[in-house]
Length: 404
Image (cartoon, rainbow, N blue to C red; front, side, top):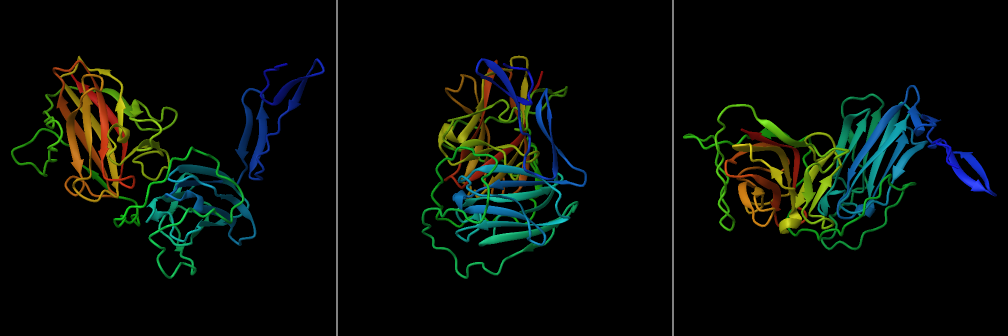
């Protein structure tokens, strides 16, 4: 009974084919709903409408988080969401048109926001692709007013109902979220929330993080910065080598965006949660995707590649951007490593330690060169060596190149 038409549901009733038209209504008056027989339902924004995008990363108690988007006079609920998983990322998109201005409200049922006492959550609001607001640190709720087409961030209004005392350090089981009318648009599987750290969390920056560029090459007679210390419990750090001229050939580039997402990288221990692709758009150097590493669980806190043939190259280079959150001391660091025996053993190309090589909440760029004259194939690995689930390294825009 298949009529090759995406606009019908094809069934057989009493030995006769029945082709029932599908309903393409998305219950949004701001879109024109049509059906293309070759592709299915199409929801086109009507003239004068605008896009609203809400990017959320929950804290350890995601079920406490809910949000609502109202017309500016609070007479109409335009969109809402609740029921989120702990330490998870969501992107919600809506087409809006019913009012020139809107009020956005995000709530936390426990009254401690979504950063930074029990996890490092955060959120962003985009209008027509332009970021107009971000946050995470608040009490019971955070309110933001905006009008369609605004290009700069408006004023964030703190409510008067913020608790007068800090929440107890012994947090009870998560409280169900309230005050919202629909579930989130995506439902990723949840992994257990980590226990709150006893140390003071690092506050979320009040503005967009600054960007630092540092390219590491061969040591010079007068280095401009202190080199990374070689860890005493690991193989000696491979010394960078100077380039000998010529053109670098790109072997791969990964920005961790759809459709490839993970690109050439593999989760060291799938399902563990200490290494995962982050897609929330907040902790990324470009786009909405990056790789997030945490804790010090060995292979579980790592991402690696399959074997890559490099026999034609004399020198190899790994370039990437990274961003640290809540790394507390110089013993919390991460490594770039390679293996020439399919992962049986690993050699350290370089390591980066908190306060020595980087500070939290800043994007850094690295370019590491190493000798490949005796290497026919290898695997690359990024590995985190922190102290808990709240200590995170985000890696983005990785380029692997060779020089013949």
